Image 1 (cartoon, rainbow, N blue to C red):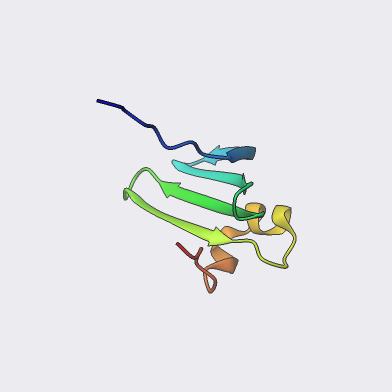
Image 2 (cartoon, helix red, strand yellow):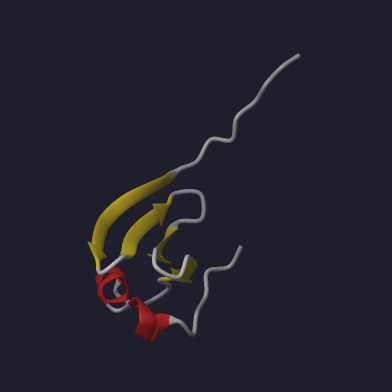
Length: 73
């Protein structure tokens, strides 16, 4: 029996946490782009945002202003 594991090429570029909200800026080498993840630990809600043509640091610092473009699966 052969066991395989999925290899991921996602790298964390930046992380911040405040008031129970964790925000990460990630690079997906396979897709060739950045995305931001937001996890609200108090409500257990989470979402991802594709950076696209915007500044990665702008999306990282202001993820709620970028909710109109969820990350494609």
